[in-house]
Amino acid sequence: MNLCRYAKNHGYTPADVAPLVGLNEEQAGRVFKDIDSKRAVARYLHASPQLMVPVPEVASFASA
Image (cartoon, rainbow, N blue to C red):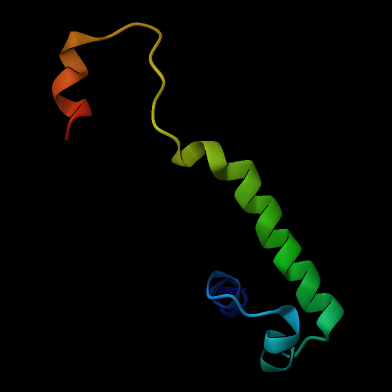
């Protein structure tokens, strides 16, 4: 999985990585799709916090 993630992050195709990880091209393609779906589900974890109203106590942390 780590090698597939590295390959995906650096623009390699499933066909490029499949022989290196012992999978066929279709299986490597499924791994790439799995990576995409996990990233989509976790995308909100990388978002900035959204406050309903300004909170003066944390204003100094927001600019850091």
